[in-house]
Image (cartoon, rainbow, N blue to C red):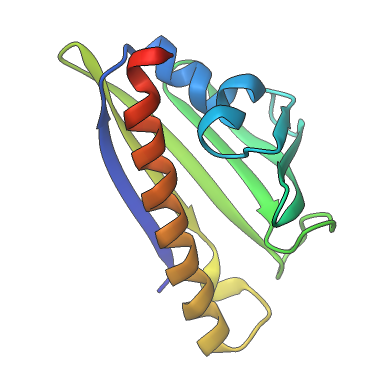
Length: 144
């Protein structure tokens, strides 16, 4: 599995969903529950924290305000992202009716310097993680 792709409809306007995925306070409400730091510019630092998983380090790759946000992060806690240890996550927002269509793609599993079985395991784990996170976001949307 090379990538995990998920798409959901969020009952919130694009600017609200943008704040949820690209602003540290919003991101921490549905994904990085231990807190987040996002320097929202290409090359800007990104830190995601979970009490049970640790601190994951990354950097912003792409910012198209209100439309697209991409970051690269190290798949192991406490290490800087580098070739062979990092994945790319990209959010794409599309207005739809009164809400927003949100697409998330996490890619790079096949480039991780681990066994093929471990690559598959990590992709499956990530898929479950995105399923839960996006469910939390869609449930939280009316309160954003």
